[in-house]
Length: 403
Image (cartoon, rainbow, N blue to C red; front, side, top):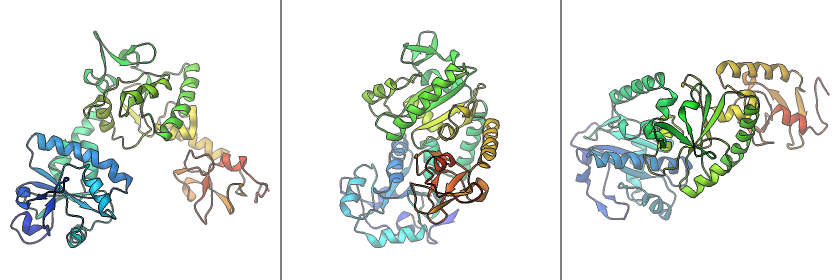
Protein backbone atom coordinates (compact mmCIF):
# COMPACT_ATOMS: atom_id res chain seq x y z
CA UNK A 1 0.00 0.00 0.00
CA UNK A 2 1.05 3.58 -0.65
CA UNK A 3 1.81 5.83 2.28
CA UNK A 4 -0.04 9.12 2.45
CA UNK A 5 2.45 10.53 4.93
CA UNK A 6 5.23 9.04 6.94
CA UNK A 7 4.10 10.19 10.36
CA UNK A 8 1.46 8.28 12.31
CA UNK A 9 -1.02 9.46 14.88
CA UNK A 10 -4.39 9.09 13.18
CA UNK A 11 -6.28 11.12 10.66
CA UNK A 12 -5.37 14.49 12.13
CA UNK A 13 -1.62 14.02 11.71
CA UNK A 14 -1.84 11.99 8.50
CA UNK A 15 -3.83 14.53 6.48
CA UNK A 16 -3.65 18.33 6.19
CA UNK A 17 -7.28 18.72 7.25
CA UNK A 18 -8.52 21.69 9.22
CA UNK A 19 -12.21 22.01 10.02
CA UNK A 20 -14.82 20.29 7.87
CA UNK A 21 -18.38 21.40 7.18
CA UNK A 22 -21.60 19.45 6.80
CA UNK A 23 -23.93 19.92 3.78
CA UNK A 24 -25.98 22.32 5.91
CA UNK A 25 -22.87 24.40 6.62
CA UNK A 26 -22.26 23.34 10.24
CA UNK A 27 -18.76 22.55 11.42
CA UNK A 28 -17.81 18.86 11.67
CA UNK A 29 -15.29 17.90 14.33
CA UNK A 30 -12.30 16.01 12.98
CA UNK A 31 -12.39 13.36 15.76
CA UNK A 32 -15.62 12.08 14.17
CA UNK A 33 -13.43 10.65 11.38
CA UNK A 34 -11.03 8.81 13.70
CA UNK A 35 -10.94 5.04 13.28
CA UNK A 36 -12.93 5.10 10.03
CA UNK A 37 -12.02 4.20 6.46
CA UNK A 38 -11.98 7.56 4.65
CA UNK A 39 -12.88 8.25 1.04
CA UNK A 40 -11.53 11.57 -0.23
CA UNK A 41 -13.91 12.53 -3.02
CA UNK A 42 -12.44 14.95 -5.55
CA UNK A 43 -15.24 16.27 -7.76
CA UNK A 44 -16.96 19.32 -9.23
CA UNK A 45 -20.56 20.06 -10.10
CA UNK A 46 -19.72 21.31 -13.61
CA UNK A 47 -18.43 17.92 -14.76
CA UNK A 48 -21.14 15.46 -15.93
CA UNK A 49 -19.21 12.38 -14.80
CA UNK A 50 -19.13 13.75 -11.24
CA UNK A 51 -22.85 14.46 -11.31
CA UNK A 52 -23.45 10.92 -12.54
CA UNK A 53 -21.15 9.30 -9.96
CA UNK A 54 -22.27 11.21 -6.87
CA UNK A 55 -25.66 9.42 -6.57
CA UNK A 56 -23.94 6.03 -6.90
CA UNK A 57 -21.48 6.93 -4.16
CA UNK A 58 -24.28 8.33 -1.98
CA UNK A 59 -26.28 5.10 -2.32
CA UNK A 60 -23.27 3.00 -1.28
CA UNK A 61 -22.48 5.43 1.55
CA UNK A 62 -26.00 5.20 3.00
CA UNK A 63 -25.98 1.42 2.80
CA UNK A 64 -22.66 1.24 4.62
CA UNK A 65 -23.69 3.75 7.27
CA UNK A 66 -26.98 1.93 7.73
CA UNK A 67 -25.23 -1.28 8.68
CA UNK A 68 -22.68 0.42 10.89
CA UNK A 69 -19.62 0.11 8.66
CA UNK A 70 -16.86 2.51 9.66
CA UNK A 71 -16.81 4.56 6.48
CA UNK A 72 -16.78 8.30 5.88
CA UNK A 73 -16.45 10.44 2.77
CA UNK A 74 -14.88 13.89 2.61
CA UNK A 75 -15.72 16.05 -0.40
CA UNK A 76 -12.73 17.95 -1.80
CA UNK A 77 -14.25 20.45 -4.20
CA UNK A 78 -12.88 21.41 -7.59
CA UNK A 79 -15.75 23.83 -8.16
CA UNK A 80 -15.01 27.27 -9.57
CA UNK A 81 -17.18 29.34 -7.25
CA UNK A 82 -18.80 29.10 -3.82
CA UNK A 83 -22.46 28.93 -4.96
CA UNK A 84 -21.63 25.96 -7.22
CA UNK A 85 -19.79 24.25 -4.37
CA UNK A 86 -22.66 24.79 -1.93
CA UNK A 87 -25.27 23.62 -4.43
CA UNK A 88 -23.31 20.44 -5.18
CA UNK A 89 -22.46 19.76 -1.53
CA UNK A 90 -26.11 20.01 -0.47
CA UNK A 91 -26.81 16.94 -2.63
CA UNK A 92 -24.26 14.94 -0.60
CA UNK A 93 -24.70 13.26 2.79
CA UNK A 94 -21.05 13.70 3.88
CA UNK A 95 -18.78 16.55 5.07
CA UNK A 96 -16.49 18.65 2.90
CA UNK A 97 -13.34 20.70 3.09
CA UNK A 98 -14.61 24.32 3.22
CA UNK A 99 -14.59 25.99 -0.18
CA UNK A 100 -12.33 28.74 1.07
CA UNK A 101 -9.66 26.40 2.49
CA UNK A 102 -7.59 26.51 -0.67
CA UNK A 103 -4.27 25.45 0.96
CA UNK A 104 -5.89 22.25 2.26
CA UNK A 105 -7.50 21.41 -1.07
CA UNK A 106 -4.28 22.04 -2.96
CA UNK A 107 -2.25 20.02 -0.48
CA UNK A 108 -4.62 17.03 -0.77
CA UNK A 109 -4.67 17.27 -4.55
CA UNK A 110 -0.86 17.36 -4.68
CA UNK A 111 -0.45 14.62 -2.10
CA UNK A 112 -2.57 12.16 -4.10
CA UNK A 113 -1.57 13.47 -7.53
CA UNK A 114 -5.14 14.18 -8.57
CA UNK A 115 -5.20 14.95 -12.29
CA UNK A 116 -8.74 13.92 -13.20
CA UNK A 117 -12.18 13.83 -11.61
CA UNK A 118 -14.20 12.16 -10.25
CA UNK A 119 -11.57 10.56 -8.03
CA UNK A 120 -12.18 8.62 -4.81
CA UNK A 121 -9.01 8.00 -2.79
CA UNK A 122 -9.68 5.47 -0.02
CA UNK A 123 -7.53 5.65 3.11
CA UNK A 124 -7.09 3.12 5.89
CA UNK A 125 -8.55 4.06 9.32
CA UNK A 126 -5.23 5.48 10.48
CA UNK A 127 -5.19 7.83 7.50
CA UNK A 128 -1.59 6.90 6.71
CA UNK A 129 -2.14 4.22 4.05
CA UNK A 130 -3.87 4.42 0.69
CA UNK A 131 -6.10 1.35 0.43
CA UNK A 132 -7.25 2.23 -3.09
CA UNK A 133 -5.91 5.10 -5.18
CA UNK A 134 -9.20 5.45 -7.07
CA UNK A 135 -12.35 3.56 -6.08
CA UNK A 136 -14.73 5.20 -8.57
CA UNK A 137 -14.74 2.15 -10.81
CA UNK A 138 -15.30 -0.17 -7.84
CA UNK A 139 -18.30 1.80 -6.63
CA UNK A 140 -19.76 1.85 -10.13
CA UNK A 141 -19.33 -1.90 -10.55
CA UNK A 142 -20.06 -3.24 -7.09
CA UNK A 143 -21.62 -0.52 -4.94
CA UNK A 144 -21.36 -0.94 -1.16
CA UNK A 145 -20.11 -4.58 -1.33
CA UNK A 146 -16.78 -3.11 -2.52
CA UNK A 147 -16.08 -1.93 1.06
CA UNK A 148 -13.40 -1.82 2.46
CA UNK A 149 -11.93 -1.47 -1.06
CA UNK A 150 -8.82 -3.52 -0.28
CA UNK A 151 -7.03 -5.61 -2.95
CA UNK A 152 -8.23 -8.77 -1.18
CA UNK A 153 -11.85 -7.62 -1.30
CA UNK A 154 -11.56 -6.65 -4.96
CA UNK A 155 -10.12 -10.08 -5.79
CA UNK A 156 -13.10 -11.73 -4.06
CA UNK A 157 -15.59 -9.61 -5.99
CA UNK A 158 -13.89 -10.25 -9.32
CA UNK A 159 -13.86 -14.01 -8.69
CA UNK A 160 -17.55 -13.92 -7.77
CA UNK A 161 -18.28 -11.88 -10.89
CA UNK A 162 -16.52 -14.38 -13.15
CA UNK A 163 -18.46 -17.21 -11.55
CA UNK A 164 -21.73 -15.28 -11.84
CA UNK A 165 -21.34 -14.63 -15.57
CA UNK A 166 -20.19 -18.20 -16.21
CA UNK A 167 -23.38 -19.57 -14.64
CA UNK A 168 -25.68 -16.88 -16.05
CA UNK A 169 -29.03 -17.94 -17.51
CA UNK A 170 -32.07 -15.98 -18.57
CA UNK A 171 -34.04 -17.44 -15.67
CA UNK A 172 -31.41 -16.19 -13.21
CA UNK A 173 -31.37 -12.73 -14.76
CA UNK A 174 -35.14 -12.49 -14.53
CA UNK A 175 -35.43 -14.14 -11.15
CA UNK A 176 -38.58 -13.71 -9.08
CA UNK A 177 -37.03 -10.65 -7.47
CA UNK A 178 -36.51 -9.11 -10.89
CA UNK A 179 -39.94 -9.44 -12.49
CA UNK A 180 -43.62 -9.18 -11.82
CA UNK A 181 -45.00 -12.46 -10.52
CA UNK A 182 -47.92 -13.81 -12.54
CA UNK A 183 -49.15 -16.75 -10.54
CA UNK A 184 -47.03 -19.85 -11.01
CA UNK A 185 -44.92 -18.37 -13.78
CA UNK A 186 -42.37 -15.61 -13.79
CA UNK A 187 -43.46 -12.96 -16.26
CA UNK A 188 -42.23 -9.80 -17.83
CA UNK A 189 -44.75 -6.98 -18.10
CA UNK A 190 -45.60 -6.23 -21.72
CA UNK A 191 -47.72 -3.84 -23.78
CA UNK A 192 -49.89 -5.57 -25.04
CA UNK A 193 -50.81 -8.24 -23.79
CA UNK A 194 -50.37 -7.77 -20.00
CA UNK A 195 -47.69 -10.41 -19.51
CA UNK A 196 -45.40 -12.92 -21.21
CA UNK A 197 -43.71 -15.91 -19.54
CA UNK A 198 -39.95 -15.88 -19.29
CA UNK A 199 -39.98 -19.42 -20.67
CA UNK A 200 -41.00 -17.94 -24.03
CA UNK A 201 -37.72 -15.98 -24.14
CA UNK A 202 -35.45 -18.94 -23.39
CA UNK A 203 -33.54 -20.09 -26.46
CA UNK A 204 -33.79 -16.71 -28.18
CA UNK A 205 -31.31 -13.89 -28.62
CA UNK A 206 -32.58 -11.26 -26.18
CA UNK A 207 -31.65 -7.58 -26.13
CA UNK A 208 -31.89 -5.91 -22.71
CA UNK A 209 -32.66 -2.31 -23.57
CA UNK A 210 -31.73 0.23 -20.87
CA UNK A 211 -33.45 3.52 -21.68
CA UNK A 212 -35.61 6.30 -20.24
CA UNK A 213 -38.13 8.94 -21.22
CA UNK A 214 -36.80 12.44 -21.84
CA UNK A 215 -33.41 11.20 -23.11
CA UNK A 216 -32.94 12.48 -26.67
CA UNK A 217 -30.41 9.80 -27.71
CA UNK A 218 -32.84 7.18 -26.32
CA UNK A 219 -35.73 8.51 -28.41
CA UNK A 220 -33.61 8.36 -31.55
CA UNK A 221 -32.25 4.90 -30.85
CA UNK A 222 -35.64 3.48 -29.83
CA UNK A 223 -36.98 4.42 -33.28
CA UNK A 224 -34.09 2.68 -35.00
CA UNK A 225 -34.22 -0.39 -32.75
CA UNK A 226 -37.98 -0.70 -33.31
CA UNK A 227 -37.48 -0.70 -37.09
CA UNK A 228 -34.78 -3.36 -36.84
CA UNK A 229 -36.91 -5.36 -34.40
CA UNK A 230 -39.75 -5.33 -36.94
CA UNK A 231 -37.44 -6.41 -39.76
CA UNK A 232 -36.11 -9.33 -37.73
CA UNK A 233 -39.60 -10.38 -36.67
CA UNK A 234 -40.70 -10.41 -40.33
CA UNK A 235 -37.71 -12.64 -41.05
CA UNK A 236 -38.86 -14.92 -38.20
CA UNK A 237 -35.56 -14.40 -36.42
CA UNK A 238 -35.45 -15.71 -32.87
CA UNK A 239 -34.97 -12.26 -31.40
CA UNK A 240 -36.67 -10.40 -28.55
CA UNK A 241 -36.08 -7.13 -26.73
CA UNK A 242 -36.96 -6.37 -23.11
CA UNK A 243 -37.17 -2.78 -21.91
CA UNK A 244 -35.19 -2.22 -18.69
CA UNK A 245 -36.55 1.12 -17.43
CA UNK A 246 -34.22 3.77 -16.12
CA UNK A 247 -37.12 6.22 -15.80
CA UNK A 248 -37.28 8.39 -12.67
CA UNK A 249 -41.08 8.45 -12.54
CA UNK A 250 -43.89 6.15 -13.68
CA UNK A 251 -45.37 8.63 -16.13
CA UNK A 252 -42.11 8.66 -18.07
CA UNK A 253 -42.04 4.88 -18.00
CA UNK A 254 -45.51 4.70 -19.54
CA UNK A 255 -44.54 7.18 -22.24
CA UNK A 256 -41.43 5.14 -23.05
CA UNK A 257 -43.38 1.88 -23.27
CA UNK A 258 -45.86 3.51 -25.64
CA UNK A 259 -43.10 3.80 -28.26
CA UNK A 260 -41.89 0.23 -27.87
CA UNK A 261 -43.28 -2.97 -29.45
CA UNK A 262 -41.49 -5.30 -27.03
CA UNK A 263 -41.91 -6.51 -23.39
CA UNK A 264 -40.80 -4.40 -20.43
CA UNK A 265 -39.93 -4.92 -16.79
CA UNK A 266 -42.56 -3.44 -14.46
CA UNK A 267 -41.77 0.04 -13.17
CA UNK A 268 -40.16 0.29 -9.74
CA UNK A 269 -38.43 3.55 -8.95
CA UNK A 270 -36.73 2.40 -5.73
CA UNK A 271 -32.95 2.23 -5.29
CA UNK A 272 -33.11 -1.57 -5.16
CA UNK A 273 -35.42 -1.81 -8.17
CA UNK A 274 -34.90 -4.81 -10.50
CA UNK A 275 -33.96 -2.49 -13.36
CA UNK A 276 -31.31 -0.79 -11.20
CA UNK A 277 -29.92 -4.16 -10.10
CA UNK A 278 -29.64 -5.26 -13.74
CA UNK A 279 -27.95 -1.97 -14.62
CA UNK A 280 -25.40 -2.58 -11.88
CA UNK A 281 -24.99 -6.24 -12.88
CA UNK A 282 -24.08 -5.20 -16.43
CA UNK A 283 -22.21 -2.07 -15.32
CA UNK A 284 -24.47 0.22 -17.37
CA UNK A 285 -23.05 3.75 -17.14
CA UNK A 286 -25.07 5.53 -19.81
CA UNK A 287 -28.29 5.24 -21.74
CA UNK A 288 -29.35 4.04 -24.19
CA UNK A 289 -27.54 0.74 -23.74
CA UNK A 290 -28.40 -2.55 -25.43
CA UNK A 291 -26.97 -5.68 -23.76
CA UNK A 292 -27.42 -8.79 -25.91
CA UNK A 293 -27.97 -12.20 -24.32
CA UNK A 294 -27.47 -15.29 -26.47
CA UNK A 295 -29.78 -18.34 -26.75
CA UNK A 296 -27.70 -20.07 -24.06
CA UNK A 297 -28.39 -17.25 -21.58
CA UNK A 298 -24.81 -15.94 -21.67
CA UNK A 299 -23.87 -12.35 -22.48
CA UNK A 300 -22.97 -11.94 -26.16
CA UNK A 301 -22.08 -8.24 -26.04
CA UNK A 302 -22.73 -5.07 -24.09
CA UNK A 303 -22.17 -3.03 -27.26
CA UNK A 304 -25.49 -3.81 -28.94
CA UNK A 305 -26.27 -0.12 -29.47
CA UNK A 306 -23.06 0.47 -31.42
CA UNK A 307 -23.57 -2.68 -33.48
CA UNK A 308 -27.14 -1.67 -34.36
CA UNK A 309 -25.97 1.81 -35.38
CA UNK A 310 -23.16 0.35 -37.47
CA UNK A 311 -24.84 -2.63 -39.14
CA UNK A 312 -28.60 -2.27 -38.56
CA UNK A 313 -30.46 -5.63 -38.68
CA UNK A 314 -27.38 -7.28 -40.25
CA UNK A 315 -25.82 -7.15 -36.76
CA UNK A 316 -28.07 -10.04 -35.64
CA UNK A 317 -27.18 -12.31 -33.83
CA UNK A 318 -24.47 -9.89 -32.58
CA UNK A 319 -21.82 -12.59 -32.16
CA UNK A 320 -18.09 -12.03 -32.68
CA UNK A 321 -18.28 -14.24 -35.77
CA UNK A 322 -21.05 -12.10 -37.30
CA UNK A 323 -19.24 -8.85 -36.50
CA UNK A 324 -16.04 -10.20 -38.06
CA UNK A 325 -17.99 -11.19 -41.19
CA UNK A 326 -19.50 -7.72 -41.46
CA UNK A 327 -16.14 -6.07 -40.99
CA UNK A 328 -14.69 -8.18 -43.80
CA UNK A 329 -17.61 -7.16 -46.01
CA UNK A 330 -16.97 -3.51 -45.13
CA UNK A 331 -13.29 -3.94 -46.04
CA UNK A 332 -14.31 -5.25 -49.45
CA UNK A 333 -16.81 -2.46 -50.06
CA UNK A 334 -14.26 0.18 -49.06
CA UNK A 335 -12.23 -0.69 -52.18
CA UNK A 336 -14.94 0.94 -54.26
CA UNK A 337 -14.71 4.33 -52.59
CA UNK A 338 -12.54 7.25 -53.69
CA UNK A 339 -9.35 7.46 -51.62
CA UNK A 340 -10.08 11.16 -51.02
CA UNK A 341 -12.82 13.69 -51.72
CA UNK A 342 -14.25 17.10 -51.03
CA UNK A 343 -17.41 16.99 -48.93
CA UNK A 344 -20.16 19.62 -48.90
CA UNK A 345 -20.14 19.66 -45.11
CA UNK A 346 -16.45 20.45 -44.65
CA UNK A 347 -13.86 22.81 -46.11
CA UNK A 348 -10.85 20.47 -46.09
CA UNK A 349 -10.10 17.46 -48.22
CA UNK A 350 -11.10 14.16 -46.60
CA UNK A 351 -9.09 10.95 -46.88
CA UNK A 352 -10.19 7.35 -46.47
CA UNK A 353 -8.87 5.74 -43.28
CA UNK A 354 -9.36 2.28 -41.83
CA UNK A 355 -8.97 0.94 -38.32
CA UNK A 356 -5.34 0.15 -39.18
CA UNK A 357 -4.60 3.59 -40.63
CA UNK A 358 -6.07 5.95 -38.07
CA UNK A 359 -9.74 5.05 -38.00
CA UNK A 360 -11.56 3.90 -34.88
CA UNK A 361 -14.79 4.50 -32.98
CA UNK A 362 -16.31 7.83 -33.96
CA UNK A 363 -19.60 9.69 -34.36
CA UNK A 364 -20.28 10.67 -37.95
CA UNK A 365 -20.28 14.46 -38.33
CA UNK A 366 -22.82 14.18 -41.15
CA UNK A 367 -25.54 11.87 -39.76
CA UNK A 368 -24.55 11.92 -36.06
CA UNK A 369 -24.52 8.11 -35.88
CA UNK A 370 -21.92 5.65 -34.65
CA UNK A 371 -19.02 4.76 -36.90
CA UNK A 372 -16.05 2.45 -36.59
CA UNK A 373 -12.93 1.79 -38.62
CA UNK A 374 -13.57 2.95 -42.19
CA UNK A 375 -14.25 6.66 -42.52
CA UNK A 376 -13.55 9.76 -44.51
CA UNK A 377 -11.38 11.76 -42.14
CA UNK A 378 -9.91 15.25 -42.14
CA UNK A 379 -6.32 14.88 -41.01
CA UNK A 380 -6.17 18.58 -40.11
CA UNK A 381 -9.07 18.78 -37.69
CA UNK A 382 -10.47 15.29 -37.01
CA UNK A 383 -13.76 15.71 -38.93
CA UNK A 384 -15.01 12.17 -39.70
CA UNK A 385 -17.93 10.78 -41.65
CA UNK A 386 -19.12 7.36 -42.81
CA UNK A 387 -17.97 6.30 -46.25
CA UNK A 388 -21.60 6.22 -47.37
CA UNK A 389 -22.17 9.75 -46.03
CA UNK A 390 -19.10 10.91 -47.90
CA UNK A 391 -20.43 9.56 -51.17
CA UNK A 392 -23.90 11.01 -50.52
CA UNK A 393 -22.50 14.46 -49.70
CA UNK A 394 -19.73 14.60 -52.28
CA UNK A 395 -19.56 18.09 -53.82
CA UNK A 396 -17.89 17.15 -57.07
CA UNK A 397 -14.36 17.68 -55.81
CA UNK A 398 -13.32 14.02 -55.51
CA UNK A 399 -9.68 13.32 -56.21
CA UNK A 400 -7.71 10.15 -56.75
CA UNK A 401 -8.48 6.86 -58.45
CA UNK A 402 -12.13 7.58 -59.20
CA UNK A 403 -11.85 11.30 -59.98
